[in-house]
Image (cartoon, rainbow, N blue to C red):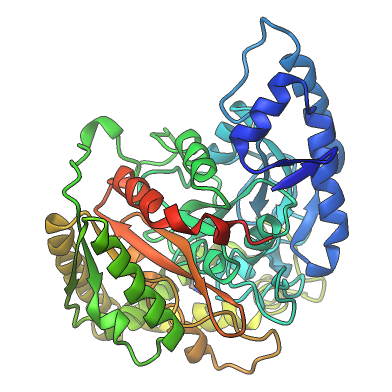
Length: 482
Ligand code: GLN
């Protein structure tokens, strides 16, 4: 929600009506968001604010709104932030890493280009975990992001800046990336909606690669309608990404009013009791509304994290080999030979977590261990996909919590493995490539928010949206937390 001249604008629809009706100008709107950006700098959500550019775009839009012959794109009035892993021509892009210090992108990501073509305004580039590796936004070279509502807590990650930028109303919605939960988990930690489409829905052209067979661009917002409108603009085939599917090739399945929930997730020992209780209540309330909701078994649950981290680290170690100091960003000034230049650039440029993953990935891909780890994890991924596909052939969607617990404290001492384990429920959707959404579900005793997650069959995003509406129905007030 954003307030302009004493009036509240809760969603894109409100904003567009205001702009067309003359109650609001784009300049006033962008100014209002910029005020919020400035009032919240202590949260460290923004890496760069495009103040002048956003104001110029707003002035241009105002002119066009009042020219009757001008055509307006579907996202006019949508002011968005973009995670620091998605390229925009002539703008810096650093993936929260020292190694990309000073790098300026030479082209624009397809998704961003489509947003701009639809008349969205980009207000700035937001903080994230280094190369999107992390679950609490503490691995960024720019320092941690604070949760906007609970400032002693983390906002989640890796798209922590995205979530907080939306949470404190510095923009309408944010574009993030989700390799294993980075859009859904921070949305859950900040009381927001986080949506990751099917693998192959939104072009990855211009998205810095982490785990290429897992990565998808997603949206964080407060209103389902806003999220779906932004998704509709970004999705669809692109000559630059051969993994995208032609929408004409997939059929929309009809609604059968049947959902499943993962019993093993709800009974998982790591699950916070309040999340379990609220989740089961939610199941009951859906049942009371004539939806069949059945528990299903999933005995592979404890293989999710090992399979995910083996495979994504392997892909990351390969993807990140391009950062050698010759092609992009920062080069170590302390080297005298070529080899030294590679090693010093990477030693100085990458942070601890990224190095850990490169080492782990290189290890699992090495000759002696490839079969034992990488090939095994691929087989596990196939088994997981087969099992979840069977469930989603029978049911419209699969419910599970988004995270086992709510946001931890900023200063909490946690081992890497403890942090990895906190992704247990979110990595599933990326391992199988299916669309998933996190919706605000409740708050724990400390008033920290948590989400419910819904996964649907591949390319069945329409089912996610139908059920999301139903799930949110009685929780509109939770979405509007601030
Ligand atoms: N927390 C997970 C990881 O560190 C997911 C990150 C993401 O989705 N980008 O890999």
